[in-house]
Length: 163
Image (cartoon, rainbow, N blue to C red; front, side, top):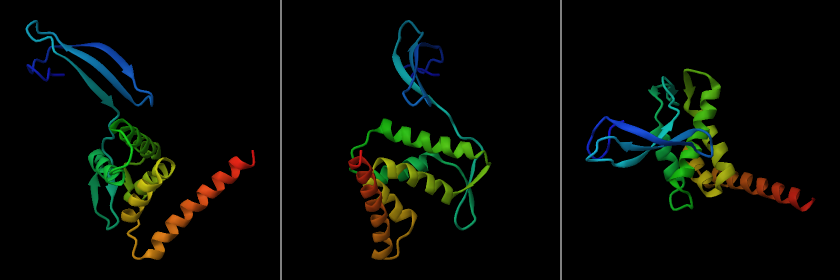
């Protein structure tokens, strides 16, 4: 790891901590050069390698964490979410993809995984992502998603009232 200040490759790890989700390690580092001694942090995450995504039209492209993160950022635009929470969602989705143990995964499967996580976290982000993912053609298809969310909410409220 190179020092971001002086670019020296001589750095040492001062402290390592696993994040709450257990999927990332935060390392506190220090440049070993006496004139620099700059301190900085790094994050170590699991990387999905050699995964191809099969698009709806049959094209294949390599998996891109950046693309997933960009889609989630759009869904959560102006919503109360931190960058750390977004990273946790990405990590959870990637974990689910890795559990499939396939070298190629259809984009629809990844879209369904994203919707599963968004539905639990934020209804507005869920609807935003679903509107793009499902390519709503009219108000009726949009209404169907809203009705399903409303039904879920009513069922959840009914369960808590009965206790």
